[in-house]
Amino acid sequence: NTKLIAVDPKNIDMNKIKQASEILRNGGLVAFPTETVYGLGADALNGEASRKIYEAKGRPSDNPLIIHIAEMNSLEFLVGEVNEDARILMEKFWPGPLTLIFKKTDRVPYSTTGGLETVAVRMPSHPVAIALIRDSGICIAAPSANTSGKPSPTKASHVLEDLNGRIDMVIDGGDVGIGLESTIVDMTGNVPVILRPGYVTREMMETVIGKVETDEQAKGASDDFRPRAPGMKYRHYAPKAELILVKGDAGHVSEKINELAKDEESQGKKVGIIATTEMERGYHYGTVITIGSRSDRETIARNLYSVLREFDNTDVETIYCEAIEGDNLGQAIMNRLKKASSNHIIQLDNDGEIEEQT
Ligand code: TXA
Ligand code: MG
Image 1 (tube, rainbow, N blue to C red):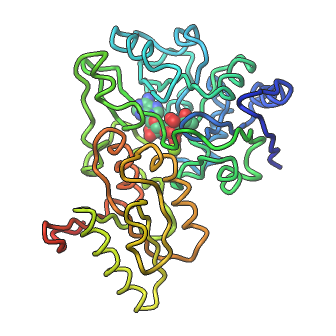
Image 2 (cartoon, protein in one colour):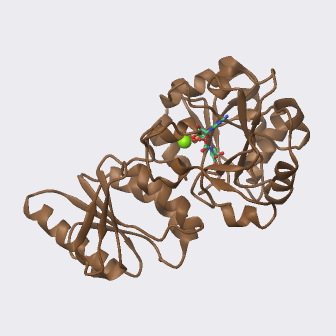
C-alpha cells in the first residue's frame, strides 16, 4: 500500500524525510512535490529502480526521465561537457523550473535515459524536493507523478488518484506553485533549443545568453516529425472528455462556445466549458469552470491541470476552452492545451465565424 505523509515546506520534519530517503535508497518509489508539478522519484543511477517508474506510470520505455539534483557537484557525475551557455543558464535559473539536456556519462543507466546518450538534469527549488535529494544522498530520477497520458499532478491527491497502491510513498507538501512542467532546453548543439516551453521563457534566457531556438514541435504546430523530446510525441495532459480549443477575439469566442454548447446540449450531450474570469458570466450552457484571469497567466498555469482533472470527475463528454495568446508563459499554456486537445482547434475569423477547424 502507498503511505501518505504530510510535510510542511515551511517547517520540514526531517524524521519524515528520512523515511522517504530510506525507501529511495532501497530502490523504491516516492512521489514528492516540486515547484512545477509532483514528481515520482527513484534512484536515478539504479536501473532497476528507474524501471519501476515506467511500470507504475504505464510509461513507454523510450521516454526518458529527468534527473533531479540538489548540488552543483552532482552534475560532474552525470554529464559530459558543460558549455558556457549552460553554465550561465544554471547560474541564473537554478534552482528552478529549468531542465537542461547534456551528453550523459557511463554512470547513468540507459533505463533512466530511455536508451539515449543524453541526459536531462534539473535542480528544483521546492524545499521538500531539495531536502529529500540532500538527505537521501542520491540523484533522483522523476517524471511527473501521474498515470502516463493524464494531466500532471499539482496536488498530492492527484498523485493518489492515479498511483495509489502502485508506489511506496507520497509526500504531501501542499499545492505546487507553478503548475506546469519545467522548461526543457537541449544544450548539446551549437544553439540551445527549447524542447518543451515552461515558466522559464525564451525571452528570459535570451537576456542572459545569445540566441535560443524553439523546436517546431514544442510550438505545438505539428506532430508530423519525430520530436526531440521523446515524451512530447504522446497524447498528453489529456482529460477523458474531448477537449476543443476556440481561438479568436475573446467576445466572439464566448459567443461561439455558447452556440456550440447549446447545440450539443439540445442533442442530449453533456458539455463543459473552461472559462476565463472575464468571460465566465457570459456562458449559459454546460458546466462552467473558471481557470483565472486572461491578464494573469500564472494563475491560469497553476489551475490548468486541476481544472482538467475536475472535469474527469464529471460525466462531461466535450469540453470547450478559450485559447489565449501564445506569448511567454502563454506559449507554455497553449503547448499543454494543444497536446491535451490533440490539436483540436476552432479558429474564428474577424466576424466570429468559423474560419478553420483542425
Ligand atoms: O517539471 C518537471 O520537469 C517535472 C518535475 C517532476 O520535475 N518532471 C517532468 O518529467 O515533467 P516528465 O517525465 O513528465 O517529462 C520529461 C520530459 C519528457 O518529455 C522527456 O521526453 C523529456 O523530458 N526528456 C527527458 N530526457 C530527455 C533527453 N535526454 N532528451 C530529450 N528529451 C528528454
Ligand atoms: Mg509527464
